[in-house]
Amino acid sequence: MRRAAAGHRGRVFLGTAVLALLVWQAEASDADVRLTHDGPAVLGSTITFKAELVDSDGRAPSGSFQYTWRDNAVEQHYYETETTSNTTVYYSVSYPASKYHVGEYTMEVAVCKWGWLSIHCGDYTSRRVYFRVSPLMNGNITIEQSNRTVSTEFVASSEVAKISVNLRKGDLDYITKTATSITTYWFVDCKAYNQTNDFTFVHNFTNPKSFHTIEALVVASFEPPTTTTVAPTTTSTTPSPVPTTPKPSNNTDTNSTTTTTTTTTTTTTTTPTPTPTPTPTPSTTTIAPRNSTVLSNATVPLLANATFPYICNSILDPKPNTTYGYFQREVKIRAPISKLSIEGSTWIQPWNSLSLSISCNGTGPFYKCIEIHLGKYNVTGNETCSQDSDKLETCKFNFEHYFLEPLEYTVLIILGNEVSKEIHPVAVNIYKLTPKPQLSVIVVPVSCSLVAIVLIIFGIAYYVQNRSRFTVEVADFDFGQSTADMEYKTFTERLRDSFNNAVRPGSQHERLLGANSLAHKRTRNTDEDKHREQDENAAYEI
Image (cartoon, rainbow, N blue to C red; front, side):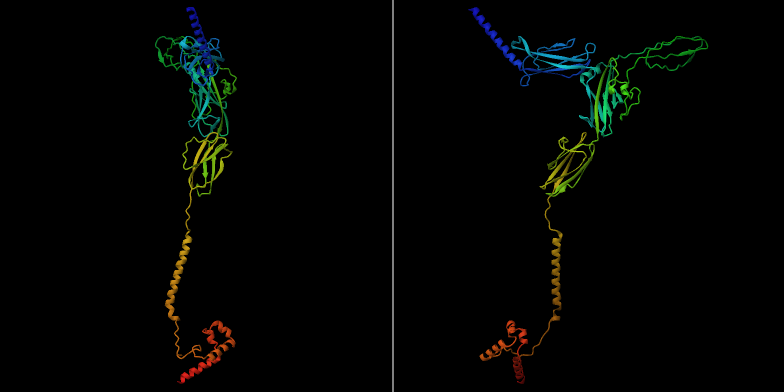
């Protein structure tokens, strides 16, 4: 019974272990390690590798891990870390010139993960990466203008260019800690311009639309410095010496001593002094003026490829115990945008066209884009004008736009070329006029009304003043005058008069004018005049 139970427990444990192993293998198959480095590295410097564990979701896994590093060099580098829960580890290794050669190597990292109860560290994942050990220092040339790094091949002609060699950190640490001297030589179009102890050079490219090649040669010497020993001069003399001052020695060694020589009239025996062997001194640095003119110093010849290796495709072999760094960059010079001019009226009425004439100086092609913002706009400097916008060969164009609403707008003009960018806001005011009557509409009617009133008043006054001149008094002394209409007539007489008026000439004219008209009175017939005369005579007689 006991043996059966023990066997059963053993089978259960074995099954559990197998199941755990299968689960762990399934988990391990989803893991990965990302292996990167900061190479290539110059021979003798240090290169650093980075291993980063991730799971299938790209997140850091949990657990305890152990990392094993190894390369494929003849003298292999091997390193095994302690157990850690870190999912990101670093490993740095150097390749000195005394043991290794220039070439391509591989570095491998293997990761194992400790299982349950930390009994066994099983394989988790691994990765291999290639890297290169180079004969030259690694880095690049950077150019700065107006505290801005130039990321393209175009350089502005109006600004001073600060040119620097940006060495890889491992290479820089190597030469600064071990080299006895470091000198940087600068060349523009195969002409030597400067040599410095640092890695910076200042130059001004003044000719737009030109092309230049910048070359920098960093020379790190590992020659040990030596000193020169000068033996003292001994002289045997006889009586009464007269001291004299000797000529200065041509020896440049500061540790040498100066002796006093005596002369007499007798023969002097002098022990010859051995000539010291000259010791090469470390190279000195000659810094050129800020305008970076071509050096005339013989230590930096104009024909650079005849003295320096690597420069201008030189075929000279590099010196022993010296590490070089050769860097090259080609640049194109362009004139930045300047003298931006914007002409046109910015106060317009609704439905009128805004017309602006824009021009500037600089090297084309130019890229422009125009934005319209409601209200005032504050320029941030981050506005961009992509190359997909309008492209111009010359910086001269017109802009027209219609505004409908009487509001305030900002027309943002963005101009750019290969080396500069100009952002200029233009405030536009759309105003609406209130209709007002013209001055003539008011003045003319008022003036005419005043003139009419004055004329009327003047006429009335003139009439009142001169009315007596036109008044005619007529006296009528015919108190007994009577008209035919007022005489008493019988029916027969009236019938007769009516008949006579109807048949006599001019009767139609009298009917039209009426009996009381002046014309009718003047055309009375002769019979009525006779009756009036008879009546007047009768009245006179009475």
